[in-house]
Image (cartoon, rainbow, N blue to C red):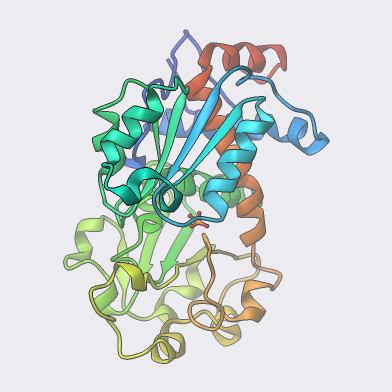
Length: 333
Ligand code: CP
């Protein structure tokens, strides 16, 4: 079984094979599984920094099945697969037979027939990776489904928080932005609560869920009450593509009252860090001086996304090989 480790070291023991069936949601992950993935990503870091490949996916193919646009997630899954020695098949809905009317499930089943090891799925409909996982026999990884979940993003976010500030237990994390439509917020809340962080969300009332108390975290309508106590602030994009109509008078008003500009960033205590999952709308949720300033760890998040996705893919596609690699490298297995 897996054991939790606050030091972020992998502690797999007893032959458990985590994530054999894929990774569909952060809410399904145990604290031990989260710790194992974070620890494995950390164990990969020196080899990746040296430019060494870690050949745990040799002879395997990962399919990136993206029905929504992506810069970071798709490319980092591709890089992660390549750094593990695997092959990548990138599927783009816009140039596929989806435009001729082929369904999501038929598309996935046809790709599965080519015998890949794993499907990495992004789709605008909440729950579609779960629907697919019930229809195919290979593991499925959720790379973002509507406003539901983005579990691999939450894992790379927490990895980055701990890389900069140590264990998140007891740390105050403020998530600021369009909470109602954010899969990133939802998955982060699940992971951070499991690891013992203190989480608060902040948004205009129209951009919080109808019953914000059901999130199980603190909430406020204005950032000024939360920023002075924050160790970590995560700013989120306004998800206009998921809103039936704009749920605020204007982006300018959002920026004025909720945007993280220099004045609001000055309220943070020394050492507090700022994250954003990207893409950033500069001048709306984050001013350029803040996005590019000394507290920003946004590009570290992007780099760490490769390490964390390597850990996820190795855990899913070659758990025994991963266990042997960790043992060989003396990584506290
Ligand atoms: N954070 C994130 O999901 O970015 P992309 O949409 O570019 O993948």
